[in-house]
Length: 361
Image (cartoon, rainbow, N blue to C red):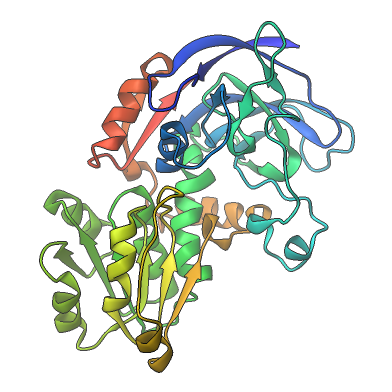
């Protein structure tokens, strides 16, 4: 056991407190990582608000990068001193979905309270949210959750890859399976939305239309590859169809707002698909017309973490960044300390931030 500082949530939707918690050593198949940087994702906020369930007390944070300090028995391809991205993708490797090449939706359950490597000083378990608990100086996670990256990769930038980048880029390239020449709408020009725009550009989309409520975010969207922008007021889907000359082949919803999912099919053309990326709270529902969607051969598909295979795809992302073909530095809108985590969360909730990063080193 060792003592580490972490941001602990003891009551939903109340400020987290920086506390000393206990972290056990890595066991079979696990690695210990010193966290250098961890970005704030809206999923962290939804968990903190109580919208995704879980248990208390809890440590959130899942979009991280750092350096491996120890490995448990059976760990392969990872050693102390390695720089790594730390993700929430805990994959058993042997269930049907893992064996089908879809580790992001591994079907083997994980007990993030009973098997948590973190505890209070008196020994009570602390919920390791999303199998990560990375709002902390150090984590112990399963080896499937980390990917080795070059040591010269800046950790603040690398942390973004662990969720926001793979989620957005992967949603376009893998989940939407965009083909060259197709038209794409990305609803939401935040951190994930900007990466979805970049993914659509990489995939060869003809037109990429960004839709958002804030004009300043739409201007940023142009810098990331949006060919057109539409303000989300009135009937934006009608404006989009004027621009495209028809409905879109793919609509990527990157905001966790149920009302937006109600509207998403209205942007589609015949044979188009809605890709669900943003995650509303668990009690929120949406409605659509099955008759219209069935008649027009349309689809709704879910995309968790961009359908990525991290050991294969994070090195690809890193290489694209090093070639200058993927913008990552520009995604960071603020750097904060762990003691400032509540302020960083409030700034993220405002909707203006692309990605806020907590720097621990």
